[in-house]
Image (cartoon, rainbow, N blue to C red; front, side, top):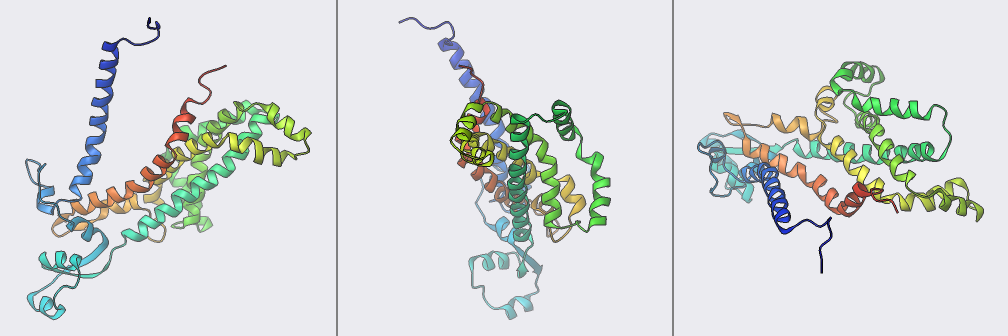
Length: 312
């Protein structure tokens, strides 16, 4: 049995495997370090040399979700013995819990704004991409280039005009304002990606559906959308990642009601300085929704990246 000229030899496979493993280790190490820091004590998190082996602690997560204050001996006696495990951790620090922190609210804002803008972007982007793919739009190429050019512009260049516009419209520090803004920013990416996917779907399928009595919308909904599901899923992942991680607009346009987690996490302050375990715990929790969303759609993502790469 002879090998094809396109098949890599064993040495090439070994080198390629070693490079992939090395790249995976380099890229995952910062993530693992952040997760580990969330389970360190404040002293271990700033120890030098850095501690790789340490005694795990949930102090960072308790500090992340609670507001605390330094208590005197008398205050500790008046408060009575701790009734929960997290109160016991706080008492060991010589502090008492005064209430919940704002991290939960900020995390919920990220969920509402991130997934809301992604859903709206997919709705508008799919319809726009279908129109550019199937209909004769005047100045189509110019319009597509104009749409793409909005993505090339750095956000900081339009931050001040957007701030003034939002203030005039009353959209500052609102969920609706942030959803509309992230949708506008991501729409160019979604239109370009989805147009490529829809172009690969044979138009004959729709023509057959129209002959069978379907309306144009029914053909779009029942024929095109199911076949474009791979492209929609992969595009949604990219749009969600941007909206989820965006920092510049969130800092400028939100401060309380609609503030998301990215600008809030760096403001977490402990006793005597930055509470690094709490910051790491907040970053770890913040990673979970996007990781779960990507894992659930990973098959669509892999198919979407290679869709149309091989012509029959």
